[in-house]
Length: 243
Image (cartoon, rainbow, N blue to C red; front, top):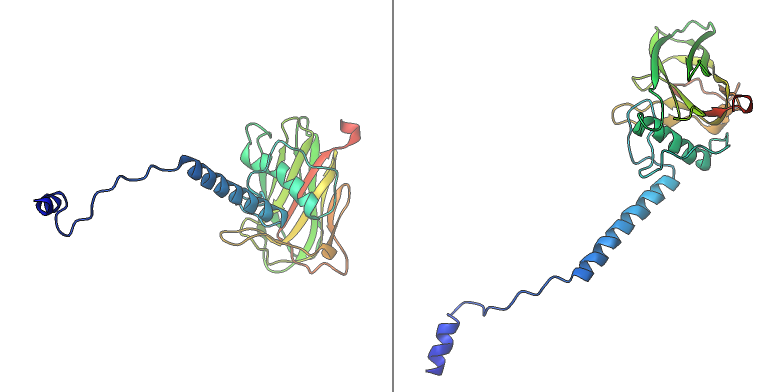
């Protein structure tokens, strides 16, 4: 009879029922915190290496995730990692919070014309046309190319950005010279690119020896510039006389 009762309680081939263990909530919390820390650490590593992780709408450069767009750029005019990081913060304001951090950006199309003759294109931005960005160049090659200049200011109008680029990504003109110059502000960050981001392609910066950045301009270095240009980015702060 005892054997019969055991047989009825546990039919042949079945596994005896056991209560399911309750989930360990503390372990889950630790596991979630670990994953969050790993993601944050990875993002910080990528940002510090200068590699972008968040593609943003052109013409703004790709930026590290998690940056605070309300922070202003520091007084650095070199193209090193520190300047790139702080410029990215201001550029993030232009790209991510146009209604909160910056004025409505102004984008104007213009032709870049070959022929070896020096040409200039200028655009104003800010209250009372406070700032001016001018692109001066000379190039050789085939036909005219459509380029764009985009300008935006911070909410307090004390910073502004000027981005000059070819929307198709790469210019096929041979530039003999170039200069992107600002008026009413001093440059805190400037960068020049031989190739602009397009579709799955990323920005390709010029080598440091190919261009120079001063308080008012980003320009080619004669003898070192390899004649390839597709994009220029400037972040500037109101000059002392304008404060």
